[in-house]
Length: 170
Image: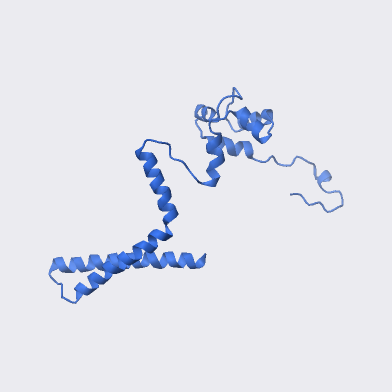
């Protein structure tokens, strides 16, 4: 992992250095202060840049693949899909109703409605789509998901929690 980070840093540094050398030699050429031996630096920087690009493309292939898929989706007026693992479940459940989501996760619908009401999100119909509820409440579905999945704090007295024995709570 560390070697990959170092390789990326070296690759980017070489690309920046070669571009700066190319720009410098072009400026020297335009100003008339271009001796013949600087031509070698210009050509060397160009070849260095061309040599580093394939390595850079290889290291960034996953990001380039994702970017090209998004560009194709954008050009074809399709929906841009996300392969991010943290977005798969919420994206799949946006069109589901609140009741379906609660049944899917085994959550108490009354407790969820109260929890959302406490956060100023009004739910009239539990069979309404989560996206619709979010738009009516001027929020996003991710906020609704996070509110629904928040763990309730323990409501036990300190006497019940400690009775002279060591208790480990998860």
